[in-house]
Length: 198
Image (cartoon, rainbow, N blue to C red):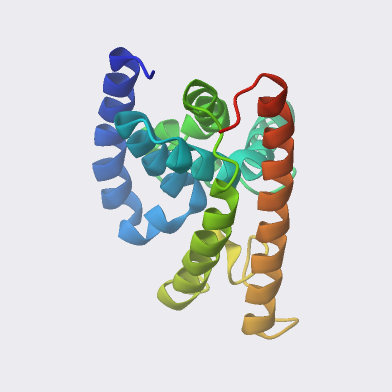
């Protein structure tokens, strides 16, 4: 169901990105949901797994739209991201090649949607992802530090000190769960209209 050429191109891109990101940012960077979804999407395509593909789509579809809006907005505003999601794209201390690789965010939600369209939407995948995603947020909280702030588990963009770190983590988990449920509902409606739900 997934063309061989697509699998080959996807695999080649990830094979370039992983060592470049590792050298620039370290392994902890791969706990960002976007990077996890990129890797998970590759596995879903290679093994043609509807459940894994559906999980990755639910995980990042809405969140990636925020990245896309922020990046496009920054282009219109002369390099000033209105939401602060893509500040790092203008950081000269990060290698230009690595920043160019990060443009995958522009395509990721659409690629995942296409994979799910081809394989079918597993309507139970969101439940599995809520558990997995919550676990990843907790793991990220204990493995990362405020200066890294992976998945914003320490604050919105920057570490916050208005409330307890554990209270903030609870807010992030609840907000993500709500976004994942909403994504599931939207995808379920769209896929259902075209008989792509399994």
